[in-house]
Image (tube, rainbow, N blue to C red; front, top):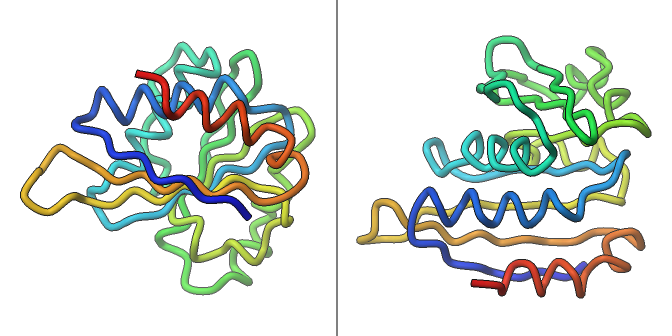
Length: 160
């Protein structure tokens, strides 16, 4: 596992990082988003969608559990906030949505990380004290596929 922390000043910075990550996503990738309420998980998912060529509005799937969006790679956006147990995730078949032809984005992914393959990208968004729009984004790569893309990811995240 490799981790990198990036600080962004505002929503535009969060979107820039999300688009940079999206440029490196491949079909079959799993992106697990975590952070407190209001930290920007859905905003990050919107940026990923834009970077994947999604043209329709990306909205929070909290009450629908999953939404699918066509793009250069199909994006499946899920939110497991309302699930009480990891077994509910398995019962709903959300792990099957991590298909070879799609990128699966899971909000509150830290709660269900063990239900997914070791091959994934984990991203934690944290509020920055005293700076209401700023965020610390901790990006952790897991697995050989991300190890192969790690240098490109670091370069993308460090770009202005």
